[in-house]
Image (cartoon, rainbow, N blue to C red; front, side, top):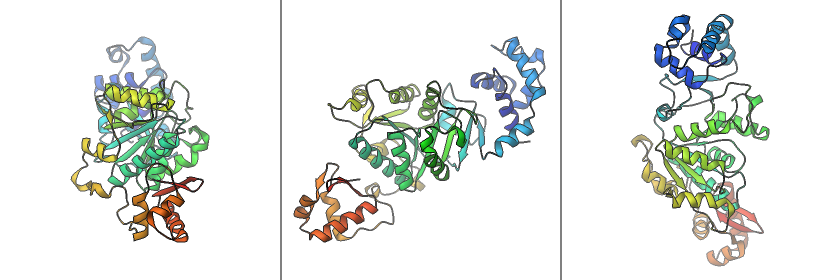
Length: 366
């Protein structure tokens, strides 16, 4: 039997929440000892009442650990207990760490720093640009990017990492099975994340996301990451809950400054006033969390993939682009390139993910 099978089966017993499960394991030393403890021994656990003890005794008779474990494995889902070596190291340190987490995908986070990227569901073009740039640069630098698969900044971050062929983890407020993915339109994105990283949740398969499940998701994101990067957040935003949790867990909080006139920048600007580190490039994050030596790369090359080479024309145009829209006529005038050549080069830069036509032949650097 898999060593986590008993612990997982205990979690299925009504009344056995994450805290109770942790208390039981800490008290008895192992899931095996909990499973074999008699009623008198169970009643010695601080805070464990007769009703819960009775539920455990009944559950041990009605549930089959082998059957339950086979069922979960057949769904392509792995379970990590807080006692496992593979359980995220930083997450294990927080006082309310989940006793078990459900993982679906490919994961190897033993030696790679994790940065959470969170932000508003109602984003601006500026927020989209900033999210894409930070996510791509972090991924190419060797960081694991964590977000919540929600609309807006979350999904932009995941997609950017996928474009950069990096590793991204999505922490869900639901089960990790296909039927539970929310929003439903993000099921293809969830599957792509599974191939490039993993889906993670505290909730068992079949659990649908509700307003009450997201705080648990937020604490996992904040707890498992060295730092949390906030990109656009309204004054009363759920994103700020993640930031506050990160501070509570003694994690670093970064914030991208925004326009004083933008409603979705009120939260981020407030975080900066409260002491969050202002960031304008990935170098600001690299300063706080240097990568392990074997993952280090030249920070000056972070914006480009290792094997990407640019032509002289591409380099010339790229130097004249910024994150503010520039019309193609101005680009042609500044670079002194022929119109067909400039347009063709801009198209190549778009294909490489380094430039974007935002409409009206106005281009920005990505």
